Length: 236
Image (cartoon, rainbow, N blue to C red):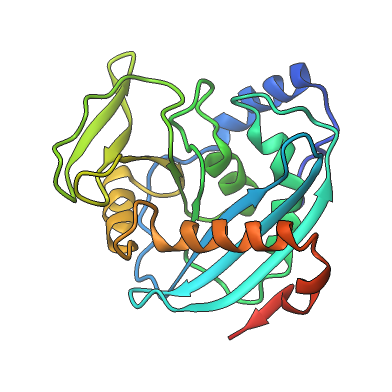
């Protein structure tokens, strides 16, 4: 993928917050990605107490959800783990992984928040602005806002609200299993984002793109990158 020039990630937490305040004005919280042929999932993994980040991107066909490409990268970070500033820890490795992707996915799902974030710039929105692509945040936990529990059946939804504004949706992707928290990242509306997450699941709580990226990033981390170097960019 061709990646536009990114800002420096070499900053303090205070500088990172100021940068988030500036970048959130560049987020486009609406749009239609059109016909989707390829969808990507992105995630990052690191061992507790370690500062090496292993980022993974998996590209799948849509709607078949067949993996066609895997890419990964590792990067050492000095940025601490601070809730709400996740991109400053994982972003450099994720960008390197995306630079290795040869295909052109129309939409990217991130394991994290979009605009459902204290400063409206979770990792899906932040990376969406940097990549200039439609992105969706699919988080396992609520970071901000309030939400009622959706009904127990698959497909049930409940809005996440903050200051009387809908900032995302709790989505039951599997009956009687905890929902995921979907929010707009960049260049897509909430309704199509929710439809896409439901269309991209294979019977698990996580949609297949981020589930595959999560599994792959953990595989890379467990091997320390060494024995999986042959699949840095592997077309299946």
